[in-house]
Image (cartoon, rainbow, N blue to C red; front, side):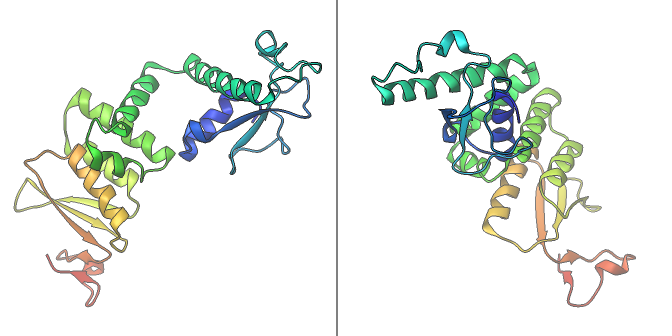
Length: 231
């Protein structure tokens, strides 16, 4: 990573809040680089998420007098002001390259986190990682544009929950059978409930099967004794 915007994108992908990132003026830096990282090929942020910046690489007009070698007064004030300014500059950096789609996803993510969709949805949203949130928000925008569909629900469900298969019932068109090849946990259950509530219409009934697949006549792999769920 070489630029400020790369730090913010990495934080977004890792699910790290922008508030957790602490910017500091680099003690030693190259005049040809914005970031002062020990490893030049670093691609992930590591705790405690402290990033040393060469503020003169792109922002010399802003910081040229703030950290003059002869200026020794109010170090804590200058440090705090630097932190605020760098976060604002980082936000500007990201927005300069944002498409309308990215902007909508950002607003939607903030709405969910701000409990616009309710406390339960906010808590469930925190369980998804950075890339999972991207998939979730993209799906929700598609839902608002095109309306609900089983195809969209199946795509989002299988993209976010590994070892997942979604079936339509032959007996009832509004019954959905969902097999998840994992043991049932509270976190996994909360994720599934969130996806179902957001993407599946109220006319549908979703039945979930964890770990053991339900039997399908004619498919031997699903009819093994001791490894089958009873519908």
